[in-house]
Length: 189
Image (tube, rainbow, N blue to C red):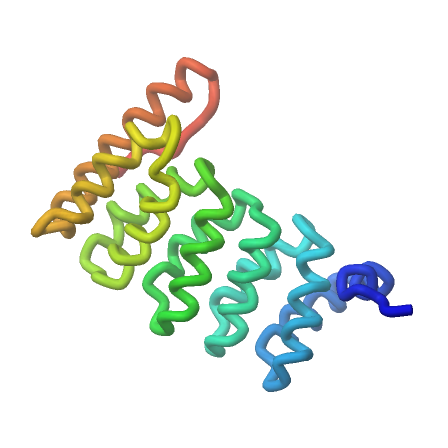
């Protein structure tokens, strides 16, 4: 009988923080099989692994950052949003791509930290291109009115000045909508 990877991962769930540390350290292993098994185990652990995966996004090893982002993509926990946004300008383009995909997996929950990021990191072409990737995928349905103007600014001849303005406007719209609903949304700076 063949055991599926997810079933294998469930059988060996770590019981202590030290085990969680070992799994996140294994995300940077030289052996791709070890990295993959660690990622599957962390994904199975779900939300409990998110703080460890956020820390792993800061690893000096590109493969550990890639695996952490891939894990966060599968878990899709909004707590990772700000840390993922901070990695949109990663020095490795493969990491940037997976980070963008992880933000897309968050759906609408990615928009507030992404707008904050556009305000703070408007001087990085890599960041602006990665943000465009995320917003292009989120630009549908009810989000179109919110995301569309920011995408237009990113496509303009001077996205470094237009995108932060459009992001601030989007955050104001979100803040007004959340005030009506009683939720809290970060304000623009």
